[in-house]
Image (cartoon, rainbow, N blue to C red; front, top):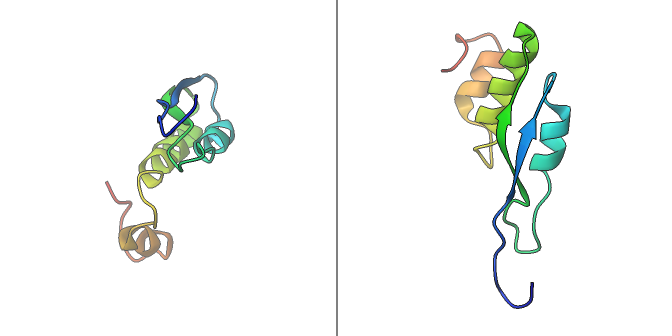
Length: 82
């Protein structure tokens, strides 16, 4: 598309997602203006540990920098942030 038109991100359905590597790849793709090229609409995974990682990664993708609570959690100084 020509000009400054911004395209809506392409919706992704991530089946059998595991811990989310494919989703991370799609999430890192940007349009020329810096807006997301893809948006993960849903990730599906039945294995509990992988599902927990997916939830954490989906949460962290909302930030340009990870929140201080995340670093406190991985340092063992607090419970897992909700």
